[in-house]
Length: 188
Image (cartoon, rainbow, N blue to C red; front, side):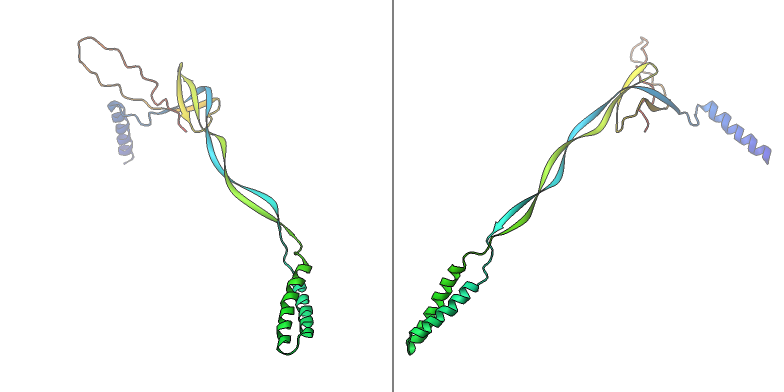
């Protein structure tokens, strides 16, 4: 049984080699970074901006002046009238005293309060979106856009590609196509 397993696995390896199938025909290479230029874009960023300001408001009255005036006016009006006129004089004294007492009390003391006003404002910031990277591999320069600065080197995943199909449109031999190294795009 062991001889059969060894013989069959050797057959698979030989058949793969003869048929041109590559088992893992990829290579890791390193390119030297020549330049890495950040691509910067202005981005709108909302921020809340708050300001504190002092607001002066008229203070409320206690009402003591109006009450005292109404009492005094009512007493004076009551002492002046007689009969049914007394009730009218009392009422007139109440209203007049309340108005006069309110004016004597004067306006309430002003109150100062701190009020915070907040607004949403847009600010613009410069942000690096990606990098234009120029690197050298096998004596040639290549340019690629990357999301991060790669540093002094860039890792490359090299995968062999088949030759382009032959096209016989005329009898003259044609030159090979200029192709960058296979898989020259960096691998992240």
